[in-house]
Length: 286
Ligand SMILES: Nc1ncnc2c1ncn2[C@@H]1O[C@H](COP(=O)(O)OP(=O)(O)OP(=O)(O)O)[C@@H](O)[C@H]1O
Ligand SMILES: [Mg+2]
Image (cartoon, rainbow, N blue to C red; front, side, top):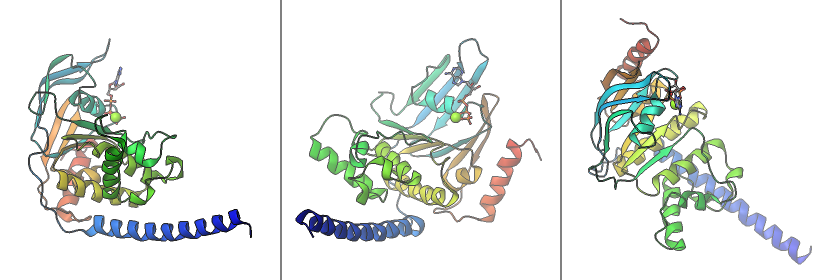
């Protein structure tokens, strides 16, 4: 065996051990996300959101959002559901200041504009030429040295159970892992408001449930305000403190979800609530 082949062999053995350790660690993480003890909610880090008389019409079109009033207290987990094209993403973009209202006012945080806001989409939108850790560090502002930024990114990767993937390229990850990197990138700056636009829409059912538990756990630990747009009413009911049903440019239903956390799939109270919201969306009014 040549020296380089021997080195390669040793390297591969090391890689296998690392792979095994990673698998174990990820397994432990998954178990912890799925069944971890309820965590104390951290107070005071989230931004409050207020909309007053907000209307949004795109050029030449009818208003998508009409004279909408909404108050989201700091730290609340709000889910937004509604039929395709009803204006969910537009509402999220208005809250984030990515769209300007045609009329009315949107206020986030204390109004000073200093609170950090992040958004996560259905597609992870990672940089293919940057390693996982650097993709996460992109979510930080330019302050702090490279070592500090990487240390912060590494800690958040651990939080999403991907510490062992810090040095790999995005192309080598599964779809669920890529979304976890996107979540880490969104969380690395410790945002006061996290907007999620169908973040789990492209994932298989089991990965979705894993990710939902993980998002809930991180939200409970960090205390940010979460606004989740989803087509999955079961997901809304599992995660949210409150569900908004958007219809005809306004809030058709504003439903509190008062079940204890962590919530159990199949809970009859939650199933009844899910049925009620689905009936509304499908036009089957009681
Ligand atoms: N930049 C834009 N210019 C013109 N019209 C727009 C623009 N963005 C959104 N719209 C229109 O506003 C309406 C609401 O769009 P929006 O993307 O908010 O819907 P949505 O509820 O998020 O739908 P989906 O569930 O399919 O994502 C649609 O009729 C859409 O065509
Ligand atoms: Mg949308």
